[in-house]
Image 1 (cartoon, rainbow, N blue to C red):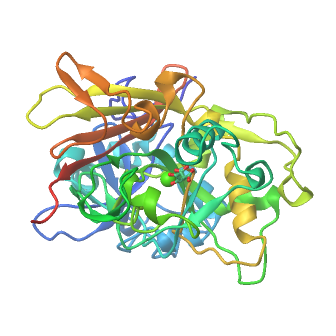
Image 2: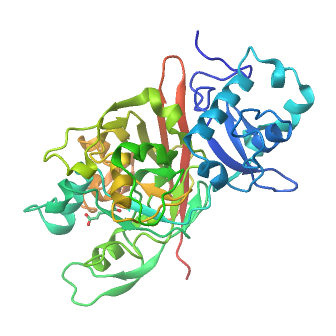
Image 3: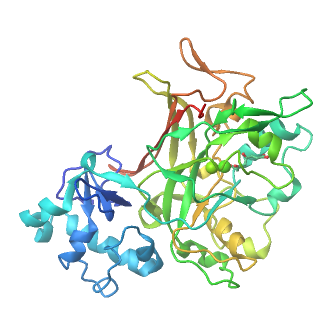
Length: 421
Ligand SMILES: O=C(O)/C=C/C(=O)CC(=O)CC(=O)O
Ligand SMILES: [Ca+2]
Ligand SMILES: [Mg+2]
């Protein structure tokens, strides 16, 4: 029989007992950040569950990992502890288990309606890297930025390309994004100009949250890489295409992307995503041995982007894509990141890169959807976009459909506000 919680959960809810994603939340009046898992319309306060002595497995029994303002300590404990926590919580929340179900006092202090919880960044992010793992995105960007002759650079099929991003400007879903100012060089004009970006874009991405790190000088083996990943979030790598196009040669993205990166609040664990594993695309040429996996897997996660223009009730779908389109897998990204001895730490964020699919309706950013502004996108009658305008809210969602339940990521949203005068 399917696992069922004592809390009613709608079949379309992103947060059934099969999911149990981790986040960090605060409530008024004390605003103390503490870890929780989402269940239906509630967040279960893990600091209360720990204080009540209900984490009674051997690894978590005496741990203070849930009395912390972020999840880093829990993540550093590794997969056996994550599995123990998941088993404990699935049992505690199941319809057959009385410990929480029949304890009115504990229920009232540990189950908080989601709408009363303010979500904060779930982890302290020391380092953030962004990959470039969709072949469709690489091909389209290459064609737009460098011309149709050789759209995909020759190294792309041999290694998961990435750049080091900026951790300090990663923000939680719901945070406004200030339109960046910077240098750009319009085609044909000989001198660069300065001002608010005129080509502000979103990038539909997901990001892996590193669980256990590795020591400096000790690369992670490709077939053990998955054990270093705690889970996934949605990520919007906001990008100023005019700033990017002028600055990125020869060192790559800099100020065109470091003004804000939005993540969704709930980390969906790889354990919850396990039933949605699917084969990754066949890689040709075969990767070097250090990137060759025994089994090369992706996840079947449907992704959607909506734009809600200023003053509009409705949001309009602009793209539908899927995580399964990625060419380079998460373990390949992580193994490659560490192959030179580079150390990762708990909470580090590894963006997948823009997740574009093969169809014109599955492209993961406006640069591709409008072909650099040449073909404006119709949101609805009378409203078109080449790039984002002030007041636009961009909302990502992601979900996996199980048999009678949904494992979802909630939303990753941000609104563009004008540049400072
Ligand atoms: O093709 C390029 O020069 C760069 C394209 C990007 O915008 C890179 C990036 O942020 C990686 C990605 O999201 O896939
Ligand atoms: Ca990106
Ligand atoms: Mg960014």
